[in-house]
Length: 182
Image (cartoon, rainbow, N blue to C red):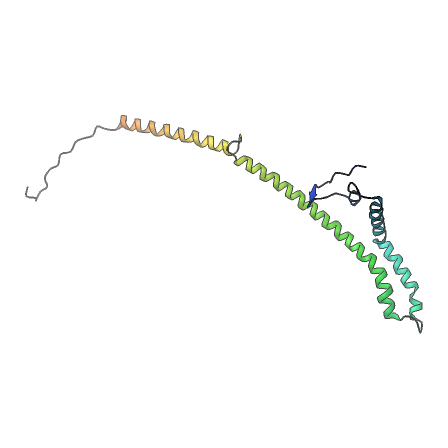
């Protein structure tokens, strides 16, 4: 029998599957008692961890209540603590843990999906920032080089036009100032 491939890859070397039954596939080389024990434990946990089982345990506990209330019986406090609470709360706690586990699994799956989306977005952003990739930053750098070349050509044209349109320079001779004795 081949091992089922994990749905979510591996975490700390262990496979992360989507369903519980996929975890029951034994690792290569394991013996049949280990498989049997794992399957039996899951079946018992699923059957005891239901509200119907809690109702059944409640009925069984209530069946013993008249005996506990008789003189010389175990007593009401003892019946509540040892019989009713242990029987009924066992199933109720298991149901609550199952509900909380499913909610936790849903949150973990959502976190995993969000992390994968963030990873893909980061890869896209890094690709766009790479100057060797077509588009993105490479395109911006090419546009900047073209704009610099156009600006350089425009400055050269403006300088040439200024030389053409500029009036000839007059040479000024220095006149002595009045009131100076030279």
